[in-house]
Length: 255
Image 1 (cartoon, rainbow, N blue to C red):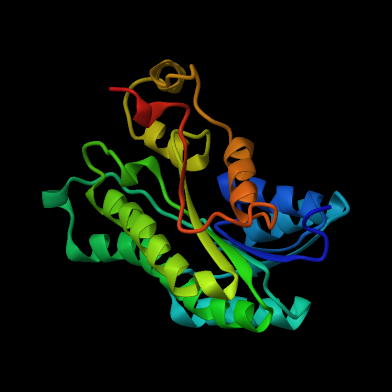
Image 2: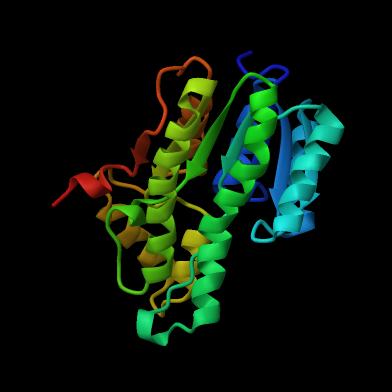
């Protein structure tokens, strides 16, 4: 198995794409650290993996807090002794128009979605260097390329991830640390569900509209994005760094 004996940190691992990523790594022999703001969600995913015969621990953390990020990294080292892969997946996505947003709301999105990537990369990379290399996958969004009304902070944070990924990749390209970013489109997750709940139209009708709006004819599933993330992280994908992988069912290809 490709990931046997490898140690992987997955932020936002308590649900959606992160949960699928954690499961896929563990199913292929990886030792997974499931990080989530809500402890019960992280613990549930770690237990699912354990019940399936895999290895995982749960760590509760607010990815926007420097002290929590340091604690996650130290806990990982205490348990497993190294870090091979980091998946920065945690995100929040409020829908607020720019002039309706206060500074606290703006900072919350930027700190949670973008600064957290900086914090985790900064803490993890020195240990990857000691371990002769590693792989980082930062989960951005198609909102980095094109967006909708009410997503100014979210799209700014996701665009920042793409730009920062390129810079980090160049910083460590000669030291065997690869850094790539994945841009999911519409995916059947709690985040998408919450946007549906905010609308007055019945959920079934909204989901029908979401599915019909995709060139591929449906929204994506978390497992499909997880497969792209594992591809980006894989040592078999050894020549790709600083890349942006779009997995959106053709959304951004359509005029």
